[in-house]
Image (tube, rainbow, N blue to C red; front, side, top):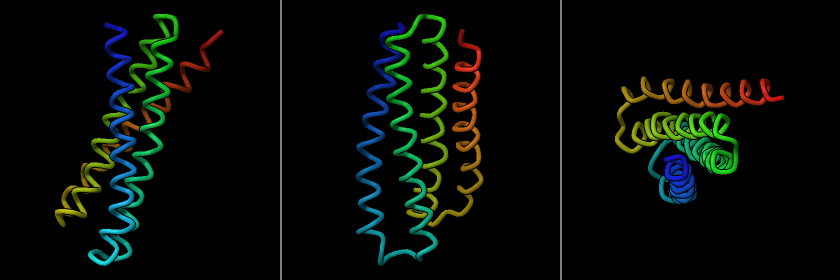
Length: 130
C-alpha cells in the first residue's frame, strides 16, 4: 500500500506539473487578448502555485518512498494536502476565469488552507526529527 500511495503521488505530481506548463502557456498566449490583465494575473498565479506544489508533491512522493514507515505516512499526508490544494486553489481560479464564475472564488481559500496545512505538517515533521 505504501508503495502504491507513493506511486500515486509521483504520478499526480508529474501530471499536475505537465498541466501546469500547458495551462501557463495557454494563459500567456491564448488568454492574453480574451481577459482583463487582472484576470490574466490571477490565471498566472494559479499556474505558478500549481507548479510549486506539483514539485512539492513529487518530493513528498519520493520522500514517502524512501523514508522509514513512520515518516513516510507524514510525507504521504503532505502530498495529499498539496494535491487537494492544487485542485481547490488552482482549479477554482482556472474555472473562475474560464467560466466567468466569480462564486468559485469562495472555494479558493480552502485550497490555500490545504497548501498551508501541508507546509505545517512538513515543519512539524522536520522539527520533531532527531
